Length: 220
Ligand code: SF4
Figure 1 (cartoon, rainbow, N blue to C red):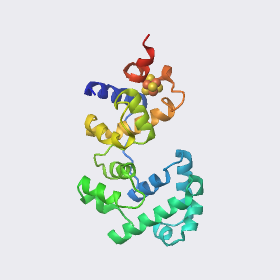
Figure 2 (figure 1 turned 135 degrees about the horizontal axis):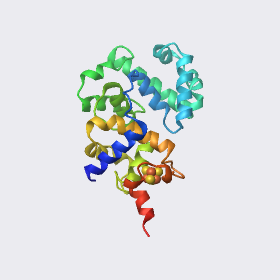
Figure 3 (figure 1 turned 180 degrees about the vertical axis):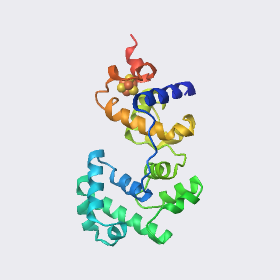
Figure 4 (figure 1 turned 45 degrees about the horizontal axis):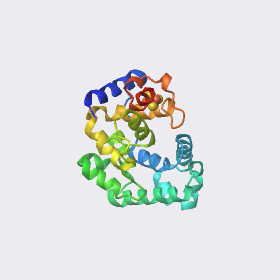
């Protein structure tokens, strides 16, 4: 992948959607939100997170509550029992390791050590861990969700045969570190608004002149 093409895509996305500000969320909130986002829509997972936060005063109370009560509070997000168990197990491990339900100790770790710790928590995969480390600690990870994966392949930033679990290190190699945050969020926005799974709106897309998928379709 030529770096000029990557730079062009980043710049066109920033012209379209701006340069997103870093999210200053609590890392435990980010962890819980990302667990809730697994296998459901953004709307449902945000609703589940809001219900969880209003059902319990804090994460200590969530941890002390029965799994069924936590599951009831996150029902709109789907897979409520599984996610409730994962959240409680993750909170319990964090408390056991840090003495409190806080992930602030990750700030003192090297990036790979922090990643390894999060991956050791139940229900936490590379995407969830990368979201927490990028957004709460500004560590250089570029999380790949379904939108980032789909739009990157269409643009030609990833080749067609790259599987989702292999995409993150490839993107991290070709994207400048200072653009991880911007590209991640802008690809998600672009994937939701324009480059949708079904019926991508090519004619409204500012990136069509550098998009492999679109240009391929224009060939006679
Ligand atoms: S031109 Fe079409 S396929 Fe390419 S990024 Fe835009 S909407 Fe997606």
